[in-house]
Length: 276
Image: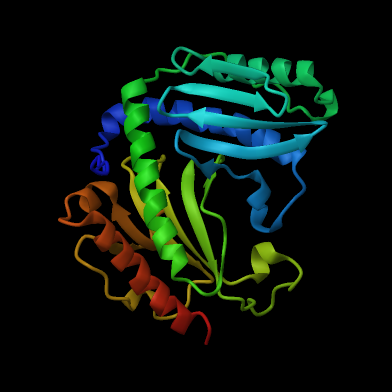
C-alpha cells in the first residue's frame, strides 16, 4: 500500500506567480457557474469543488451538460460534455484572455446559448506559471480538504459544501448554527445567518504566505479568549479571527491532529458564545 502524501512545503516566493495564474483561471470557471446555475444561498452555486486533479465545477446544465476542471496535476483547464466532446488547454504560458476565449468558443460550438456565456477576459498577459509549484498546491489542497471532511463529519448542525471561492482563491467551509442575527432581515441569509468560516488561503495581498483562518459573523464577545495551541493566534489586522500559518502547521509532528484541534476548539467555543 502506498503511503499517503505528506503536506508539501510551499515557498511563498515561488508560489505567488503560479497562485495568481490559478486564481485568474478559477475566475473563468466561476464566471460560468454564476451565469449558468440557479442562485443558492451564500452563493454556493458559484464556488468550485475540490477533486482528485484539483478543482471542478461539477456538472453544469445549460442547453447541454458539461463540466469544467482546473487540473493542478497536469496544469490544464479541461472541459467535457455529456456527449463526450472534450477541450483542454495548458495553463503554462497561457493568459486569461486565451483561456476564456477558448472555453467560450468550444462551449458555443457544442450548443450553449451565447446569452449564457460570460464575456471573454481582456487580460492577454501570459502567466508566469510553474507546473511543479501547481502540483504541490494540488497536494496541499487535497490534504486540507481531507481534514475539512473529517471536521465536517463531526458537526451536527448545517454546514456548507467544502468549496473554493474563485474571487479570493480560498478553500472554505461554513458552519451555520441555525440562529439569526438580531436586527437583520431574516430572509436575507447573507446578513441574517450566524456563521463561522473555516478556511485556507494560498496567500493574498494582506498575507503573502499560505495560511488558515477562522472567522465568525457576528464576532461574539469572548471569542478572542479561546485558548489556542502554540502557533495559532487571534488577529484583528486584515480580518478579525484566528490565523494559523501553513508553515507552522507542517512543522507539527501530526499536522492533521493539530489542525483539527484548532478547529474543534474554536467551534466548541462558538457553539457556546454565538448561541447566547
